[in-house]
Length: 414
Image (cartoon, rainbow, N blue to C red):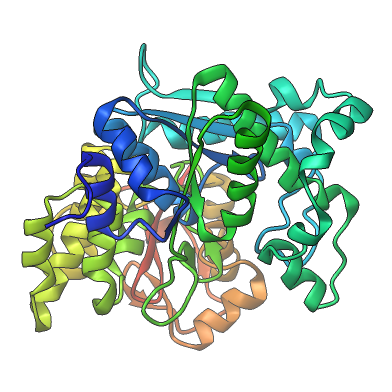
């Protein structure tokens, strides 16, 4: 029997989203009695969100599904400062033009998961108010509500100082700006809940306290646990690269394959966090043993890809995976890259082709791939790193290139 009576907190609790909450009982009462407005912030550091952001995105999605109003706050203002949370060094500062481009990409990421239609989710940019602040009046009105003593206790500051790594005055102001964001959203949108990862706890608590001290309003904070794989790796990384949500950064097939490669011990947990399958169905899949656990992984891959890329793309990715790994039809659904038709006709070194296809980051890496036996052309092992590939290798207008057992692309001349 759940300790919560609101659908929102019952669902979040049962699926493993809740790590910390400033006043769970009061938040539950508010969610049970009326519509909750809550937000998550995303700084504009890249032109796509990634799997590491996905738990926070799912928080907003569940808020919307249970009748609440989600606000996705993009940090057009705070990106100019840089969040020190979880960082060993200062972020590289971006130009205004780069921030705007990244903001557009983030909206595309979020639009797959949230309904931004009339009466739906809001997308808000904190540059609307942060860019207009006057420094001296801001310090006078809000600086007295933050003590250096307290700020030094938060992990985002304490860990950097303990490692004797620089923390700039610019970054030190970040938590004050994030607290002010919560106050502004409370005033402008009646927002009462801020959500985020556990590394944001100190920043969130600052905002809760600022709302109480300045406006006498009760605000709430809720964080999720740090999500790592069973082997201890940080969620959202694959072979050292971010697992992007936008299809122009990572094809749907590769996204599907990321989830298909989930460790056995993580399947049930990831089904609860990253899909909307009913909990009893997840419990059934979680009990599968031996080779049958692969069926659960395929369900996870399909459902996660469906949420991010749509049903058609998820079906195509599953079909392509069957073609590659089980000998079925659907190889045409593999990721496609283009190469120069004239160069291919003249003969293109396989090393360069592997790099152009995105299967190797450099010629050196491509050579190591060949020498290690991991490079394949049309499913045949590439034995010679000096091999030239020409139009004779085309099969139905494309060349299938592979790096290891899990990375495959179709190269088409253009």
